Image (cartoon, rainbow, N blue to C red; front, side, top):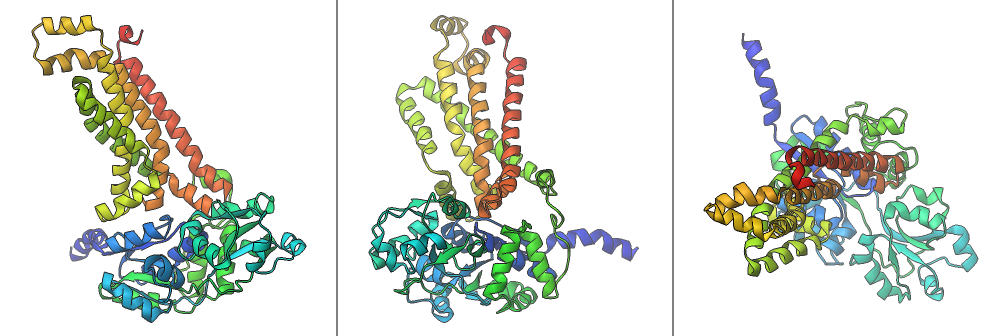
Length: 498
């Protein structure tokens, strides 16, 4: 009897385990390191370790850490000094910790390698032009530079580099995962790289010498909330064993397994953790990859459920707010101008900027800020179509409704909204289809959905992974449109449809 009682309580005990949330950025190395940290933490058996991968750039993932939405993530000392602390002098761990302690944060566990920024060219192109260092670039103003979007705006990136070397270029932004192919196709001449990138040797690149020593050292460390060692002492002790266990050559090899051999990030991490003596569980996707194997992989139904939740939960909230706002706009010309301009203005805010703003505002990452953003984006079609549908009701029908002696709310419910129903439904359909596509961006703040695959595919330029996220999203958009077309035929009378 006692044994049965314990077995009944076991699932509840597992559920009650405190959670250590690990974050990572949207590039191959960060994905892999995040998976390694999560696996080592889970092997300690003290906490439920959850990895929130691909959380955009430094600003987003650091905001998530400060808000407590994540507990720990892999970072680099140079990035912390320049981007987080805005103090180029704070490049050693002791100085960094003095500043971070003010925010309840710290760095520890140097992993053993330096992953510096650098500029690179095809070796053949650089050789022909006699370019060996960054200073040499200034003599070739006609070169085309393609730099990652984050590098273009970082304090330790292009603005500082351009000033230090007096470079005469106007570079364009290129996603880091795509820049190698652009360089190989001669669409650009120079790109920014990470020194542990696996593709440097594959594409035959020449890493240009930083002869003015502009770039600091970027020692890989774990950036964490200071309460983590107290909350999870056994887990912290396990993570501390990662100190100096990953040499630069080993990190390049791990990146190559993902980017060149096509292994999944969790498979690469599983192999490394097993080398350390951790659990050697085989990760999904360890076997030979096929497109349909990726498309209908073990995460398919989870991602589908997450995507459906994002789309329809936000759509329901938009309907509850948008239809009354549309009615108000139709009833009050003075209110109509500011209502329609306000919901129109929301559409102009870049999605990633809105998501980044909502993280500190709501104090969390994941589903909550994603739902708020999608709710705001879905308002415009619903509000506009409701207002226009009511405004387009013929004056004779409006007068007939008043002649019946019905009060305003009854006229709205029984006559006006039914007459405007087709326009309202069309606005809801438009919002739903837009939300299916926009929801893919939510993966950049850990909200899941098909965008997880798209983000991972972009990180390592994996077209099959990209398509495995894009095709289900497109199919869902078509199904949603078909569903609303069916509702239009079933719910709207033939006379109104004519």
